[in-house]
Image (cartoon, rainbow, N blue to C red; front, side, top):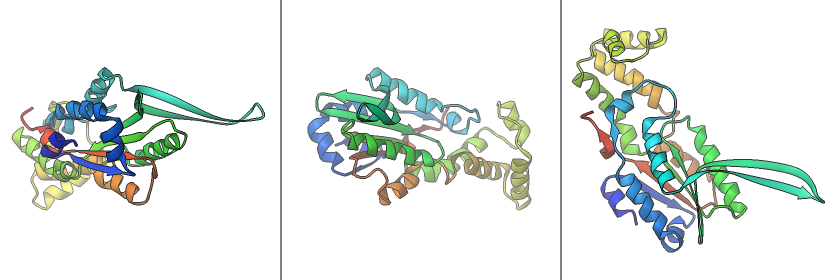
Length: 245
C-alpha cells in the first residue's frame, strides 16, 4: 500500500487498524490519494515566500482533493433530551469523502501552529465515536523535509546572491523587524555569512519547532490523542521540493 509514495520518500504510518480498513473498504481512496500526492511539487520560492495566508502548496493540494469531490463539510452533532436541545457541537473537516463503505476525512497541516494537530485529532476522535467517519488522515511535513528545510533555504539564498536585507526587499520580502535584524547582525558578527545567518533566523521563525510537522504529530499519537479513531498519517518528503524555481 502506497508503494509509489514510499519510494519517493513519503512517510506513511497507520494507527488503530487503519491499514486494514483502508485496504478492504477504501481501495479507491488509497489509489486516488496516491495519485494526488505523487504529483505534488513545491518550488523553493514558495518555501522562502514571506506572504501571509494559506500556502500555495496547500491550495494546490486542496484543488486536487476538491476535484476528487473531497469537499469541506461542517458536521453538527446535537444532544436532545425530551425534545430539548442540551448540547450542539460543530466539527469542520476540510476534506470529507463519503463512500458506500464509510467516510474518509482528511486535513492538511503544511505549516500551522502545532496545536492544530490537537484540534484535528480530537475532531476525528469525536466523529469516529459518533459513527460519522471511518478513517481520519493528516498530511504534514515529513521529518526529513523538516530536517533539510534550513539547508534548502540557505542554498536558495546563496544561489540568488543575496547578501543583505536590501537584496531581500528587492525580491519582495517584507521589512524585517528589529528583533530579526538583531539576530542576523549578531550571527554575522560571529563570522557567519548573511545566507547562513538569515536562513537560520527565517527557518526558526517560519518553520520552527512550534509548527506542524512530523515529530509534533508523533508526539500527539504517542500520547493517544485521537485514539481510537483509525488514522493515516502522511509526511511530505524533500523530493517534492524543486530547487530550480
